[in-house]
Picture (tube, rainbow, N blue to C red):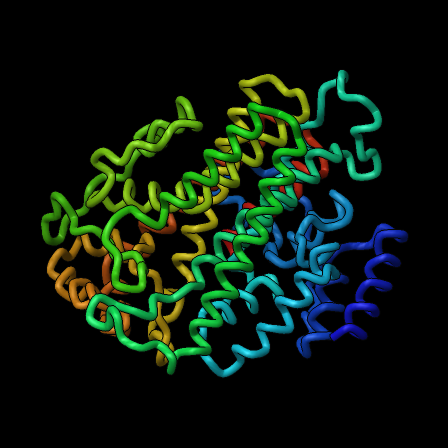
Length: 451
């Protein structure tokens, strides 16, 4: 392990000296872990924005997600992910990685989280990268001192630090979600000595997530910016609140709410973007309103995922523009961009399990994903299957639910949902001057449509 870290450290320093891409770092890391990332075909630039998005993806060369991210990383210089810089090489993270080996074979959820983070699973957004691209695309005020500027990358040192904080907060949230409940209500008070591996995994998830969160808080305090502190703190609150809304099983996995006004064979009309505001469109530092959201498929889905990620990405983009001395109106547009981009990407993720007619054996999907919520409204009787998951979502017949959703309107409505938020994000980019950073953001949005 120490030998690999030394080799990786040398390679990384050589990259930084030569200005090479972070994608090479990922390949080096993957080789060290026994898995080489395949190369991809080059991506073409695109200036297609706004309402043209729906037809644009058919007219341009197919966009590849990995290549879009790789090209974007070259634009902003070295990467923001703590897994690829000093965090990977720190003694604390090295010790965590060493202890994780003890969990191999235990099926603890923390192992899956660690694999996702190390191999940069496309189901996780490059949060820090998005923040840096928005920072470079918007530029900064002339009053910013030169010492604050990273002229080689076109961003501020403080913006890069904020992007790293965003990565840490997001990752700490994912790690904390890897904890499992070992004592259900039926098992409360029983001896857990036989679950020593699971208890150890929970401790690692708790302490590892707390370590990252503490470092993020320290970094935020170092900005010495009260407005930014309040903004990012409200994102902390939103992430925590996302784990306590709606119904949950005994492992705290979310269950969809029963549709409030469902009529078999009918679907409610799609919501406008204004209707999908929960008070955050006016003042995003205040707690979000949940009034009339639960039970309405699009509103419930939007609320869950704005709290669970959209708020963090949006407020980080807003905070980056705040550090750049940009006017409040543009800062608000930064929040809207991050919010819409996150929701568009979440809709894309929700579609992935339904791209094939049959669900692979043993596979599951989120019960609060957009296709499921839309289909519950269209076919309310299927909620009886959801009820089986009150104690554990493992009791649900996922193949049967998968087949039912494939025959309803949920998939098409989810695609429309993704397009709606993609177009909204593109419209925000139209307000920015044409730059390579703006093009990279457009390419990332277009690449989503091809996944």
